[in-house]
Length: 94
Image (tube, rainbow, N blue to C red; front, top):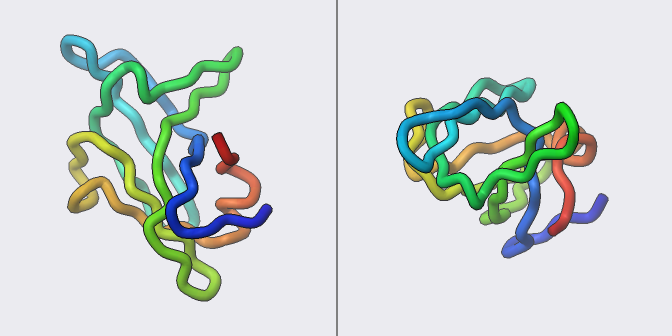
């Protein structure tokens, strides 16, 4: 799949209810785990799978950097980098 800076994407994640109108999410890739809270409208459920909306902020060689709006424990500003092959199988254009 071809991604470029500025693309809006859905990212496969684990999602469970959080406080108020938020959802607790976890994204696990080969380079680590990002977890935190996002607003309910950013989550899309399809059967047993969950996806969170994000925006690609940078492509650097084999890495895709994505920003997810929310409050995160493991990443400043909700930004994480994932390998391109992980992105190809776990992210999709919106």
